Length: 60
Image 1 (cartoon, rainbow, N blue to C red):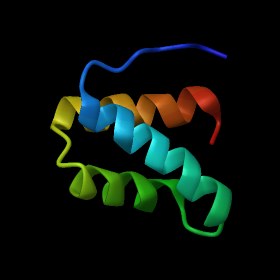
Image 2: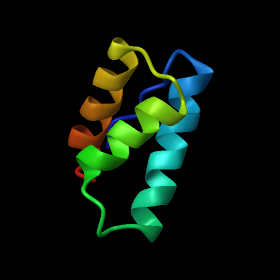
Image 3: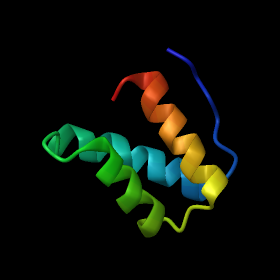
């Protein structure tokens, strides 16, 4: 398991939100949750890429 510290508060909140959503909404595709997180937390394209890599690395 890789420990990575995101730079912005938005990406930290989005990552936390995504992990919580996966616990309770496992039927929703991860790509859809990433899209929702990007809109909800107003993530930049670079932050969205980070979130996608995080999900891939953690096998969510």
